[in-house]
Image (cartoon, rainbow over all chains, first blue to last red; front, side, top):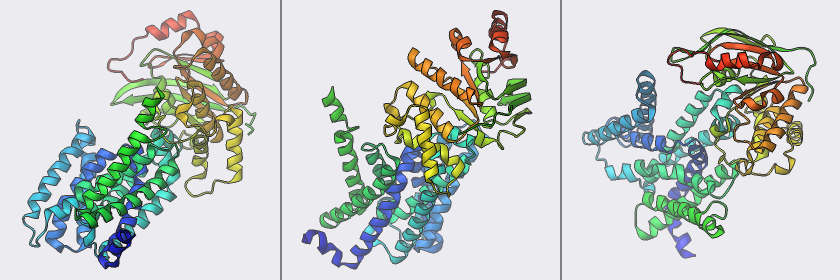
Length: 281
Length: 249
């Protein structure tokens, strides 16, 4: 078992493990909501829009985690709200508006990074490196995880009603628009917390695949949410170990592990796997 | 669960509802008594779904008022239950029959009040009332069309709704399931609840409903089925010209 315990003699690996547990669980729990609300493409757009915020944060505050956090949050908020504004004030639909805005934002981010006085590795922002987690990164992750999980659990009834049928939820007095904006905000916060681990491009994987995997196994929402959290943690930790022993990037390793879980479920799940369905025919 | 025997009513006065500034319903006046099982009849685009959604408080009114027991739909939200068309529901949603009926209690409990034994007991009663006890643990997609409609009704019953608004519930059901659903709806109206159903199959209107509303962008007629569901008025409802540009239902 040395292969399992040896890496964690190093302090940076202990921090990375803690980060994996926090980020994996929070994103995995939230993924049930993202999958059922079919927000995966919106999440993809918003994850890419984080880049200009990170660039502006780096220009003004250097690589201080709080500056990067604030920049990323503002950028995602501007793209999300800008998309809504354009779709409501013109004949363009919201997917078109958000897709246009996020690609422009992503391009702007790459341009802005050229003007940052701090030497920034674009590769690091795009694909992450959990081995470089600082104490402040961990504190931000603690904060985001606590706020996200507290709100998701406490608002679960309203969220469930909105996910299942927004019209019926509205007829029962639920403030549907407010609840869905809350979900979008939590999604952005969760993505920001996972930036250091998996980066802008791969953060979507942590936010979609755990819930999608459990969805292929279970007909229970609670199992999907809590199971997604546990799977996110396990996948992140396995990815971390693979990253350590094979010297590949932590982001790709984590996302590949989650991808293997999803593909295995797609094939082998006893309830919704395609192989079982084919064998039953 | 008991329903007050006193006469209640749903009053619709001078109701106009628009989509994109085009009126879909205009100048409607209606007075329905609770305890009726009402059929909402009209051609496609007549405004049946629009009327149901307006009563449920889901659409802004251009003009006019809707009052249930003197209260607006928003103020009477807990008493009104809107049941959408079955094809609008995500039947792959990971939830069991019992979980869906539990949802009927959520509006009353909000996010913070605990789900008590009394709530669980009301859900048990709802399941038993609609013959779903044996199916409580089943995923909602693994039900027949008739059973799915009964789950919707059980959820509304658990909500302790007084007005049931059903959008084309008989669509896609076989003959037996239609008869079962009709018995259930009659039972609800016999308990003093107001049941309003949008419906397009003209062959069974007389056996399903005690009251009929004929609609085509405006009210054509409303009254007891024997008085209103006549060839002349049906012809009038289905031949009346709709204003240009009204495509929504």
